[in-house]
Structures are given as structure tokens and as C-alpha cells.
Image 1: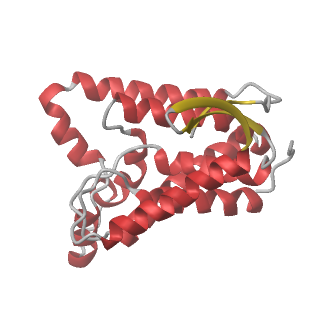
Image 2: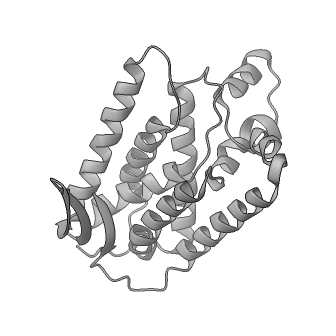
Length: 226
């Protein structure tokens, strides 16, 4: 299922959501123009669990190499499809969460979800040498918050029915619940494999989504529209 738009107008201009999208786009454009130098750039700013584990084990913890990648990795992307799909979900669901939380709390919320998502992945795969990048974990938190705040909101969705694609209006809770269950199943199946082929940090998505559910309740949004 691919969400196209929601029928849940925001009560304010989604300035923070738009700013986050622009930052991610500008960072990706910067990545692209690096050419061959992108490998060293990603090595420095992506989250590599095995390197963090090594730093903790040998007591060589540093802000730049051990802690900062948990933050910087959420603004990096591995390709145009990766970037566009993430920003599409953020644009559809982020404006309402931003409106409900308010600008400053939304910034704190988004950042916290991204950090918790990255830390969840690190806890599940502390020995992985694969770099983790992408805003997916933080955006998963936005999805979790949206599911809590606006479960009955109608979302125009592209749904495969046999060999055809149908446009349907479905409740947000159904779409986001389906997405979350898919992450759990995918993460569990990957964990059963003898070796990890990488590609998607499923547990970062799961951790981010759950963080969004909890944090949006703790932060007590000022206004909710269902």
C-alpha cells in the first residue's frame, strides 16, 4: 500500500516539516556531488554499529566518531528512491503531527525518535559493519504519533488488488498498523537468516515507531483532530 495523501488538513503551515525535507534534500545533493569521495564521507557520518561497539569496548569514546553518527546518519540517504520515499511519508504525515505538538516540541520529538531508532538498531546488531543511514527511523516515529493522534483520518492510498492498482480511502490506523506489522515480520525473518544481507534497518523502524507512540503521549499535544 502506497499512501498518496491524507484528508486531514493541518491548522498551521508545516514549516518544520518542510525545513526537514529541504535539509535532507540539500544534504543528499551534497553527497551526490562528492563523487568518489562519498565513501569516506559516509564512513565518517553514517552509523556503523561495530565501530561504536569497538569504541565502547576499548574506551575510545569520542563525540565525533562514537556519538555524533547517531544524529548525522538520520540526514543521509543512499539514493534518490530512498530519499524520495522517506520525504514523501514525512510530507504526508508530518504536518499534522507538527501542528499537534507545536514547532519546538516537534523538533525535539523528531530528533528523539531518530536517535532512539538508531540506538535500537545498534542494540539489535552491535557487531554489524554495515553503515546505517536514512531518516526512516525518525519518520517512523512520526508515523507512530500519527497513528495515535489521528487513527480515523482518511488516507488516499494506492492498493494492489490482484494485478491491478486501486485508489482507496483507508483509515490511517489500518495503513500505519499494516506498515508496522510488516516491519516486525521483515525484521524477524531477517534475524532468522544465517547471515544478514543488509539493505534495510528494520529494527530502527520498529524502535522509531514505538518511540513515536510513547513520546507523543508523554509530550501531550496541545490539540488533536481525529
